[in-house]
Image (cartoon, rainbow, N blue to C red; front, top):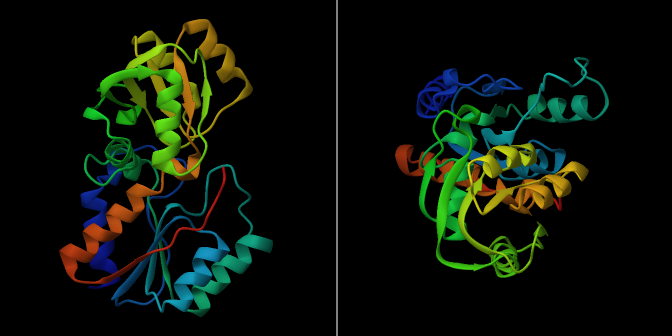
Length: 250
């Protein structure tokens, strides 16, 4: 397929016009016009770009791309090396941030629910641009046991804030750096809230509001959406897809 066809399809499929985001969604660095092989990964770091070059990729699709609103505009240092590698090798870079979090099928939140075995998953309407989701455990378990379950499913140690002996049944979540949504989850009466990161203030929010908080890892909670998107494109258009996981403990 062509670069233009891929860009247009993803703009519609992910409904990127519905989101006010922190970085441009869509094509961020232009490469070759014809796309036969794509590489997907969480973040457009140098290691992912190097892997894409080795795999003769025509395009890279990521959740965390370039040109965030708070980053310096000049192309020097690390950013220059990354972009130079893309341009020299004629590789397209596509980035999809909030639209990939929110998608009802391949999105990070939908995919995390599947990985963790949460039942009746659905978007919490009219909250946080549709980025918060809710669901249930099949059977209520202690907060400590739920922490171990998350850790096992994501293959990393999850950090739990709250009462280890409390029972958890209802769960809200938002992948990545959404720890401050804990107050919304607490006000809505959920037993637990899962996100990727944690701040000093999160501990007090959890303890004082009686909600269990789980910091499951920014990278770990957002591994699955971009991979599912790549698999979808491969099935839909017959292009080659390689998912590359660049390990990140954060």
